[in-house]
Image (cartoon, rainbow, N blue to C red; front, top):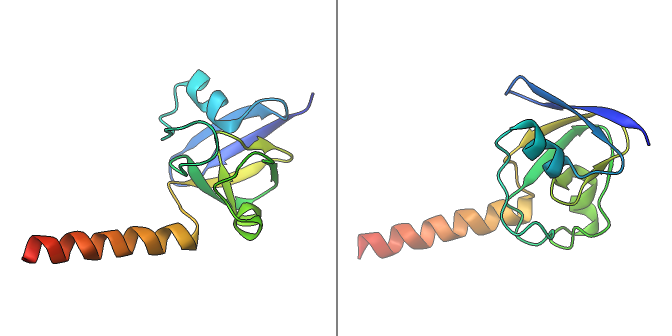
Length: 111
């Protein structure tokens, strides 16, 4: 079992996580307020952009293969190296959906 350092950019928070545990479970154990919801790799609430390092997340069904190279679902992701993560960052496909929802909400409010 290998332990890796995970730095959350912009927060000053750092944890140590083994390759046998998920990043989310370690955050919760350390008292770090990591957003999450489903805990099964589908809702993307726990998404983080991978700035440096690698993870394995074979059960992260909410991400495309390309997205999984640049984003971690912390509920599924297990570190494979030291990491720098930017929490609360979503894949471009999700960002586009969020912006579209915001535009629809705004249009409804204007009616």
